[in-house]
Image (cartoon, rainbow, N blue to C red):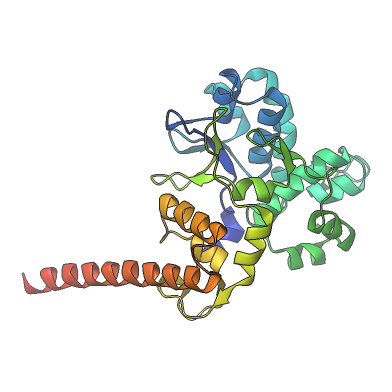
Length: 297
């Protein structure tokens, strides 16, 4: 069911920011207005939101169209036209020669949109669940996108092996150019809404993120012994680490222990599997107790 939902709705884009010093969540546009993000970084993040289906209010946990978000002040009117343009990555572009509705990738190939801009939007779609088919208004896996002409091997190579020219997203904390997926993976998840939030740290504050080398190691370590929703699946330590079973604080603690050499990769996996087992056992016991209570009364 999760995979079906992912293809229909997509997974989280970067919904807003989390200010580490004040523990405050705010929208991308508000962060720009308060000087926490540059206008350029803010616009790119909002365009990515629009290109994946909605502009997000992370405080109210609402998803809005560009028109609605401008009307409600979630974004400024000065950016409305740019965001409407990005939103066409979902609704489709009109081919000036045939009048047909075409996809983002097809518009890119026909030079109807600037290459760097189009690549950013396409990358955001893929990172959040799949390329959007504008005809049927749902996401499709990359293999299906190939078949429908919404993607090709050349574009796959560009996105698979990004250089600085195609790393169109900026980490304001480290001044690095990253891919959208890399930036999403540095976000924290709001425990109440499940939304992905870009952490903003002040100068001198500790900024936690997992570097690419460590990430590669964690993704290469796999198991089939995980319980819960991973029962019977082959899954990486990385996916387990970022699952609902592991808190933000515990994740940070374990990664730091691993990077310092205090625990091995094998021990890391053992700890994660134990946590998942404990949490799924607790959930099962609670559910069973509730069932018995209603059965006996």
